[in-house]
Image (cartoon, rainbow, N blue to C red; front, top):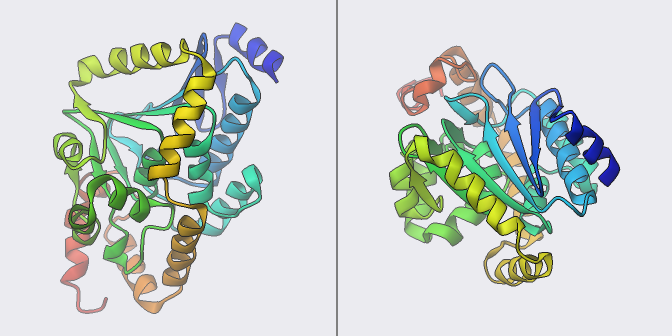
Length: 289
């Protein structure tokens, strides 16, 4: 596998259907490009499984940096029309048909994972970056949301577990039950991300940090992650329970009705989701849902 990545590196870029991968020494920069709005669908899940497998199998890779090719959307959220397909692709990493377990793999991996966030990251997109070891966001453009309760369901891929541990009970409840958007400054103040930076400085900062971390002994990184995870990372069983509750919730008539009403108002379209809280607020006032 090392030879495979080295050969790919000679060509500079590695192209998957939804990812573009660039290597700089021991750091892989993974750019998400799943138009029209970086929905988390089975193609993106498949490619994430593939890049994690490749990177973990190459001992010369130490750090993964995830960013987006779309300035408005990092990962918008899960494609609610393809949940079953997503689970099937997620199972190919470790046999567990759960996005939460796929994302948790990032948390327990020997690799250090960093999310460089510009644009909107909501729902399962937020859960993906929460599973990364660190999160840095553009002050001018990054927007965070965990809106699943507005459809009557719990975040199903670890969001409740991560947010409660990072923010504390009250703020985690505020974030999820409000289904509002949070800008980078407030997300940093709440502990959702490490820090907010000017967009012009974000890339250089993340790159410098990634290379600095990659230059230190791997053994130190691994033991630090292991011990911090022992304190702060939710057990796999808790994330699995949330996944089960999410799936149960999606089968309820209330979810189906609200999802249909949201689709009629433009849910899962690029323009309508530029202001998703407004769309969700319109659902609250609809007597049919």
